[in-house]
Image 1 (cartoon, helix red, strand yellow):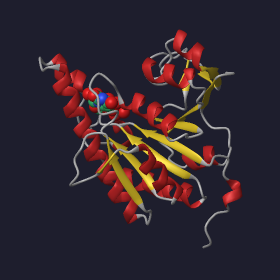
Image 2: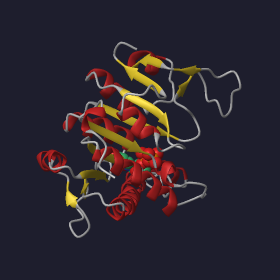
Image 3: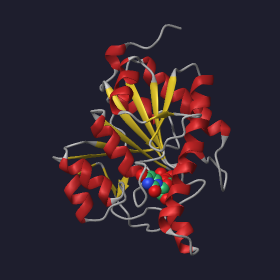
Image 4: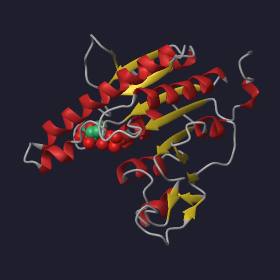
Length: 246
Ligand code: UDP
């Protein structure tokens, strides 16, 4: 089958944020190989459309610094453990992508030269220009941040046109958590500012502020159907769009 037409893609360069939860499938902990493979196939499909794809992976399916801190651990130490958890996910995703036939590079914000390249902005852009799927591991490399902030930061650094923010079990942004509140209403478009003021579950406030200040749109969508990635890339109206105009 010939590869899909390039013209059908709406974006030239995207950043996909996958939380650790997105890789978990039905498991309670860790990463589900079938789930990762399904995501990898979709990412490859999008890359075949000529779209340059960067991915930031979370680590919450394995470890969160806050959980360590709650159990009495030094917060920064816990956060470094969380960053290492994102590296495990990045390697699992890289493996699945390469099995699917994509060319990939993992760039880590923490130096672990045996397993991943160091994060160098210009190198990341070069990989993208050459059609490689770039996976950003270890978040921002700093404790007290999240991989949401890493997604916003890296998207700006590589000049991605949009962040695709994957959620699990919900279609996008709601007035309240639809899993807890029956009266929660779906919001199809909203401005960054309003999302921050209303404390809606888009991404954490540091990340959202960064997107707002730099006019970076975010598409929030349901990752239970991983084909949504391709739909958004092709311009279909899926999930919630967070933008400057709202
Ligand atoms: N983390 C960090 N700095 C970063 C990114 C992540 O310290 O720039 C740590 C933090 O402890 C966090 C953990 O890594 O809890 C896993 O990342 P995150 O919670 O963002 O993963 P997700 O919720 O997306 O699965």
